[in-house]
Figure 1 (cartoon, one colour):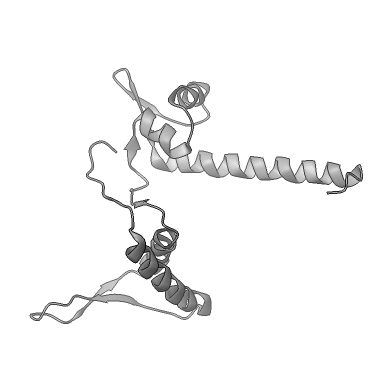
Figure 2 (spheres, one colour):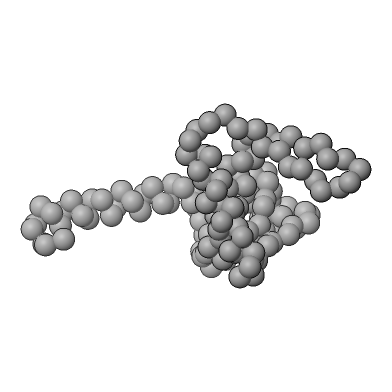
Length: 153
């Protein structure tokens, strides 16, 4: 990630409100599952032709607007982006030593550049999905055990 220029957008109250409304309106189109083509009309007097965008961008734009509408900051990264151990730890919301231990144990693939480790964003996201699935399974098992023991919840 260090080699790329990234822009993080943290919305103010007005931007958050606009994003919330735009997200709500886009969600109606997405729920209808109609074939849509996303285009942007640039407000430039010399050229008012819409710029066509790939259909998958509509879902991405909706996700971005949804997060901004909740007041969350948003940064767009390519899945192929390489992160430092500190950036990776921040993304997973764990300490850097804990992340390094995960890397050393082979839980997350990485490569070394000299003495420094680099982690692909796509590997971090896969680890995050697997960890969440493991947590859900453990919670389901605990809930089932509580039901069997008539613990009242």
